Image 1 (cartoon, helix red, strand yellow):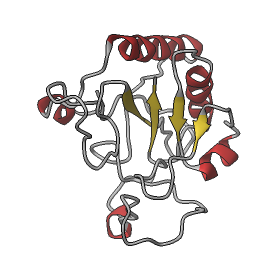
Image 2 (tube, one colour):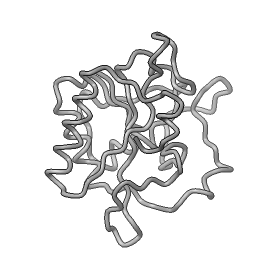
Image 3 (cartoon, one colour):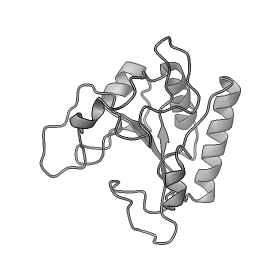
Image 4 (cartoon, one colour):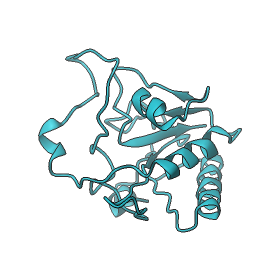
Length: 178
């Protein structure tokens, strides 16, 4: 887990099959690029099935989980276990969007907060590897990430999709689901 807060709030539950996907992905990533640390963010609350964890519209059945981006320092050196924000969310990799401004949306911009986060670029090589591992896993059904990152990182695959304009942004984390 990226932060103890997810465990303290019981937001770390996943079904056994997803736990295996996470373990396999983390192990393969570390084998391919030694020192790679895969960080889990939000998953599910174990006591009430069918109840989404806000701000998520899903994460209600233990079959969905968010993973933190991999980051590098200004010199391009990988920073294992580091994220731009203290909880792994809301430090957005801004880029062009297909979404118009809407009043009823969970697609927050949080422009006022962005300057408080560390200025770290994503480790694109590790992000490509993570996306390839997840895309190639037959157990993974969908992967959500913003289209501008799919294009700039070159990680297109039929499983990689846009979550839509009313859901939370996915340019600060990867969402995967069985």
